[in-house]
Image (cartoon, rainbow, N blue to C red; front, side):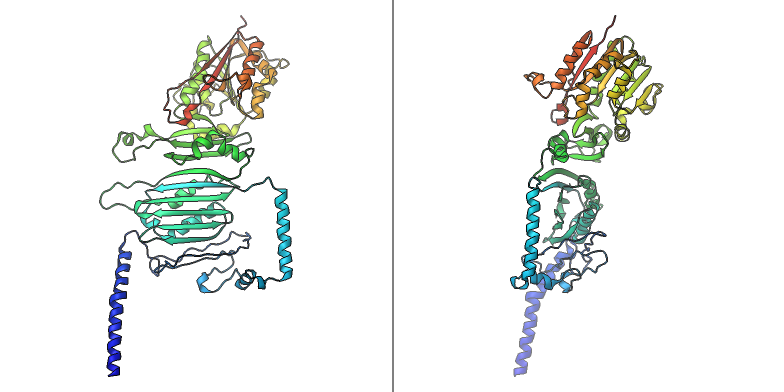
Length: 568
């Protein structure tokens, strides 16, 4: 009968649906759920994606939002969040309710019929006004900073959770004080997540490989406040340690490599362009992604200079716990600590002792009995440390214009100024009873005491100038090395058999041109000037260290000059 035929057809259809559709779907989902690194996206353990909330008082710009995607999200949810202010309700676009955008206005603005003549004229006036501004600021070009971060040994479950990754991304953006307009994530099959966040200016993005514990990360932000400190923030938010292993495998802590680049069209005269494009700090450290390890220890802008201190490892070292000699004696294989002033390399933990010993000891050993010593500059206090090793020294006057330099050095590079191994001294060399600190301009300090009109008799046995390289393109360098009255004050300040020793920048290379016509012209004029003041002899020498040439920071060798004053 008809009824029987209908029932049979219905039963066959149900069975076919079950066999052909439902069973394969259940098998796929079962495999999907059993994957250890896979979090469920639909109605499972993952909560809804986090909201984007504008910072208090921030005005959100008017934008036109468009998107297009392949129809691949068969088993995942899709959300596009609208940014609102703090006191407004946030809704999913899929809810068909919008609290911060008038969709009718958007639709009208996107169709020619929905725009009135008056509105067109208003828009035209705004465009023309904007064009006038662009004409006036033709020389101003868009600029940005680009931070690239690669991390490994990160927890796989975290790297496969869209919710946790999106939350971490929003936390990074908020701590960077940036404005996130929207973000979009794709969960890959079977594992992996790609996300991009659209910022007010530029973007933030990453992709993960959960099975390998790897994430690659990019943050591009319009130039303003430096995004360099965000390296630490990214590590804190995305460097989730791997879960404990049940098979006894060694669990490595998350590690990262990063690099900082300038994007856009930077004018070379700008401070940030000079710092990150033209100096040792930019060319040999922060812009290199392949450096095995680097971490910012301190970055301080004082009234006189910028101070940057980094821990750096150029070669891969064995991991802690692998049983290697390096692992068992990790204190001998610490990262090198490197000091930069205004982006230029000044000192490193591995080689500072060789430099400061060569700067100080030749002069103090040559002098028959050095009792009074003056140091100009040397804010790390390592030169002071070496001077205090001589038991004939009774008084050291150190003249350093930048008090913050001394404070930062004491906090971040304490080994440079450690005198605890000197009998009768102090933990900090500045606290040694023989030390007198003057946080003053050395030029004014010497001119006041030892100029031809100063009146103070020559009472210094040794003067050590450990300040700026003479080729430094700053006004203070010219004041130090180009003022004949200042050099005369040096001469006047020295006692019989007094010695002046000066650090005069990097050593000349073989075949270098006459320094009078090169960037070392200040050094040439200084040596010529000293010869006219009455010094008995002038000796020039370079300190050469046998170093690992793979370490670029060892390329700079000091060029030293000592002048001996003999009134006998």
